[in-house]
Image (cartoon, rainbow, N blue to C red; front, side, top):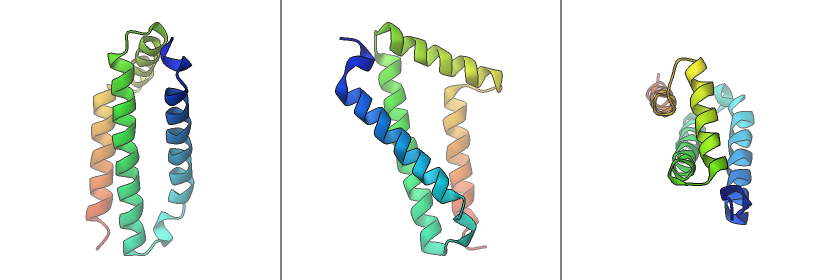
Length: 105
């Protein structure tokens, strides 16, 4: 069975994408959130990033050809932007930390 043939993997990928898209849409109103709303938004984004890191690690550890191709595609796409997957995660973590620090300003 291939990596993407797994119903668990398919469902997890679908849920992760849906949750991320919902948060991105919600984020368009971020400036209107009160302090608690902003904190909740940031915490939810941090949780999604953690889930995404785990999902990506599964790709990396899989011996399935299609999973390895996905990893290489991501590396290529990010490489065109001048970064690695780890740098992408680091940058997102820094952005969320900066957002958190600016809540009370």
